[in-house]
Length: 212
View (cartoon, rainbow, N blue to C red):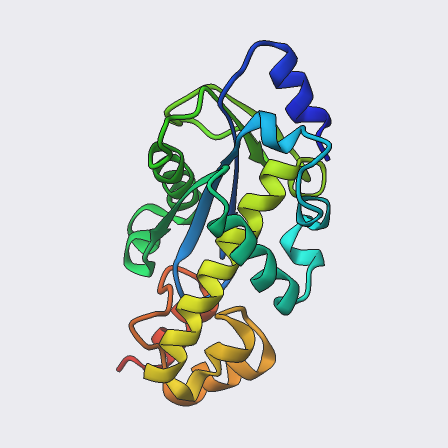
């Protein structure tokens, strides 16, 4: 999980960040991106905490494990991170791809001190505040990207839990806004709420069926 990191370090990069997003596919809720930089001397040290070896792609972690790793990453002074959230109305205005890119750029821009280079999960992202390397499947290949995926996923899940208390009819606590059968059924029964992405086909179809 450190091969890409070591390659960047060997090339002279001192401040390297990993970037990933959560929430690109749901029908409701924000898209969230996180940028994580871990001090090289600590990350590459034989005495580094065992928790570092437990960091993996957030999709392969249980919710409990993600919460535990989130606490670990956000409490250690050797870990520097920033999170950016793009709301549904902006997603509808600029499309989900552009919103995801904006979230990644804003997360990277929030790092202090700034990153010199970033490892990005997925395809190349234009407009980032520093040079980057795109890695398809990076959340399973890079520890820094995996750490970012955990912070983004936990942050977004917590946001959806808060919204579930406001709009309990949709089941956001269970599906986090993804297009499950239960969510689609609730959408047809109750119509969209302000959290829904109206530019997404199932939501747009629901709107067209309910409008006179």
